[in-house]
Length: 317
Image 1 (cartoon, rainbow, N blue to C red):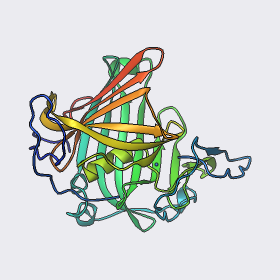
Image 2 (cartoon, rainbow, N blue to C red; image 1 turned 45 degrees about the vertical axis):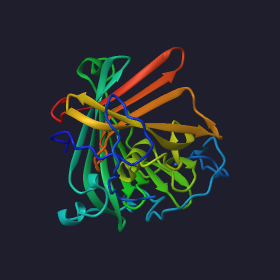
Image 3 (tube, rainbow, N blue to C red; image 1 turned 90 degrees about the vertical axis):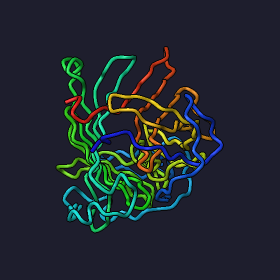
Image 4 (tube, rainbow, N blue to C red; image 1 turned 180 degrees about the vertical axis):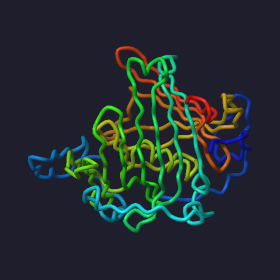
């Protein structure tokens, strides 16, 4: 459920400057402390499989055992927990009750579509507790005439690390797939959800994230300084990502006015900082750390900009 009113500010203690006249707080909030894909050796692919190795050498990291990883659709049991266990007072604040965040996405100043992030509670994934997150993305009315899209991804995240264990894709244009993360071995297996047939294997490092799970990890941890690096698999590449706080700013959106901390994701590959992508994220300074605005600039033939901004839940359809 989207915030009903702007949260109060309780900024992390750091040496950050003030932004837009918003002073830096002295006291830091108490947040839940919680701790992404490149190739190792290539596995032999059968005629029904494709094995992919991401573009960096493997790096060590803590692992997460995923019961049932590598089995077909019917081999995974997903059990919904009773409400008192699905929404307990333990864990990050965003996971203590139903939460829905809706964003308007603009590209080059034109509204392209919307994205809804819904937290649905904890479930048992083959006996292992996992956070169930559903992300729906769809195109705006105008764009849907020429490019209709209404896709859903169900995420199952490890309750301790917030790293992904399983992703289920329901797409409007392609066959539905499932991605199974073996966080201990460092692999991702993509299967057809109906037949269980392996479509692709990717060799990854242990404890790997994707952009959505990493954003929720940052929300869980908060920012008291530049965050440690984590591996993230996106765009068929492995990135080492850290989050650098830049300052504070009070911003106004259709959802209301918020006191925020500005976060800059820093992407590295092979030790080199990515300079063709520039990103910013504005997160509320309360303990929920709600992303209010996201900005990305891509330098290709010309500079492209992408902006996502929090809106009231009833907007966007």
